[in-house]
Amino acid sequence: MSKLLDKIKKAVSDENGSSARRRGFALVIVLVMIAVMLPIVSDMNYEAKTEFDLAMNYKHKAEARALASSAVNFAVIIFDLQKQVESILRQFDMSNQIEIWDIIPMDTALLRTFTDAGPFVDIEDVVSKTDTDKPKGAATNDEEGEHTYTETGDPIFQFPGDFKVEFKGEDTKINLNQLAYGAKSAVIKMLEALIEPEFYDFIFLENTSRKEYVDREELIQNIVDWVDMGDDKYTDGAKYLTGGDEQSNYDDFEPEYKVKNAKFDTVQELMMVYGVNDLIFKILEPYVTIYSTGKINVNKANHEMIEGLIRAYAVDKALPVFYNEDAMRELLGKILAKRAQYGFQNLDDFKTACADEGVNLDKSISEIADVTGSIYRIRAVGIKEGIESWVEMIVDREGNIYYYREG
Image (cartoon, rainbow, N blue to C red; front, side):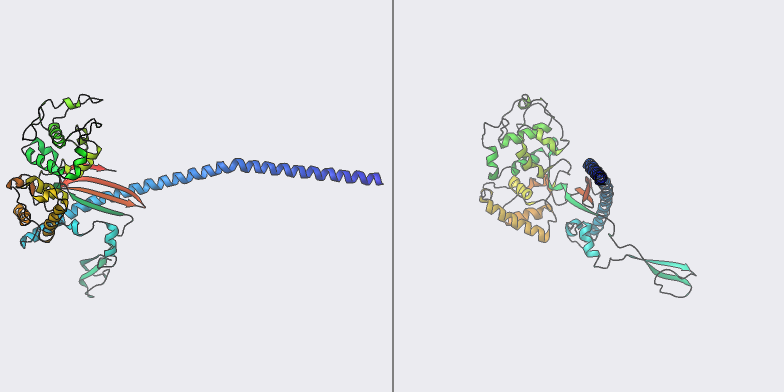
């Protein structure tokens, strides 16, 4: 009997051990499967999320592009409104230098803060209608016949996303392509005046380690030679007495290229002129263009350009103000204060404002300066869920487009 019991116990023990081994083996299989499947599932989840994000970004980019296009149309409306404002101002002999975009921010995110709290929360269109049915809205006449009532429209600017429009006068800069025409001497004067301040002396100190070293005069000479026709260096004027072959500076370039002898196609092309390095380009780029009418609008030009005009056309260039930066800042402050208060109705007003501060300007300033502008750089930006799309264009008030780019 005892032997039988021992056999039974042994059989039970063997079966329990085998079952435990099977359970242990199953656990190992499960762990291996989890280890294998986890990175696969994670990768699939990541790819799915990435594809979804890309799809949403593409959607938002398309919506932002549509908003940017809407902003361009909005800019056209603003131009038309500006013309009407100027027409009204002229009737009352008031300054025509008021531009709407200088007063009102063309940004829907900001404009909403005004319209949401103002009378434009709901746009109501007054409608006249002859109908026997009860008209929709608040009728002012309950009898049958003609009813005047209002229909509530959508709140202004209540659409998904935002757009903003920036207007910058292109007639506040020096037109480099005028070097190919009769205004060459005026443009040269302005370029000289821009780099005349002592602040820029360190750039033009002789430095033999810089392969393309040029002084102020040679820099201007090279810019002129890039545009004007002919193979000889520009030599007009007492400062430009050194002649020679204008191509000689470029012969050692790799790859070699020729002096263009034609108008600039882009402002960036200025970088191809001998002596114009990154630093000089950064100095000149904010103040030059190839799209303006050729005259600088003194009512909109920034203080650096106003300083350039004063330096270029001052009758007496030996005045202390031209050698003292603090005195120049004070002079500009007074002139700009008069501009902000009264505006310059004509160029004589600008010359008078300078003369009142002790600086008389030569009458030839009329070759390059004026009190109006007609060409603008417009940057329209659409924004949706943090994604931006933009359109940049240069147009005149008649709608002619000189430059267009989008991104």
